[in-house]
Image (cartoon, rainbow, N blue to C red):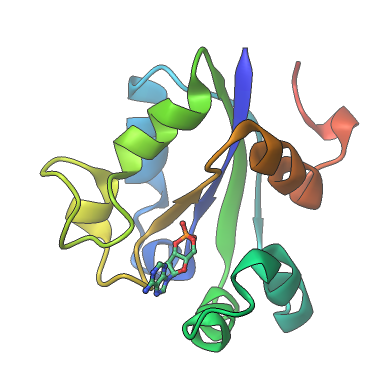
Length: 138
Ligand code: CMP
């Protein structure tokens, strides 16, 4: 079973979309193996998105990710990484396919409702960023 990290971002949590998004996750056959609501500090957001440090949107992204609570979850399924990315849709909600989470709930390329790991290596790193091994159902 592959695992991936999901984040329901501040804009979606603030608009009361957590339940809708979790329902879609479960309906798609992704099993929630760990879940927590938390408010990222600036330092934590900068570390989590360190791979984007050189990008022009980095500072704004870190500010936005600390603007309110997020929900982080570990999802498991065969092909969980691709499955979750497909369910989310393209990064830019305007370019995401109809019916996807970002198309329906995202507001713009920054406030795009959810995050998902993009590869097995990053999934491992991102899961370990938020959860210890004993917090994750095997
Ligand atoms: P996420 O999947 O969390 O990964 C990086 C985030 O940066 C992305 O979703 C968006 O929320 C944000 N972002 C803001 N501007 C851009 C951009 N121009 N290209 C890609 N990501 C962007």
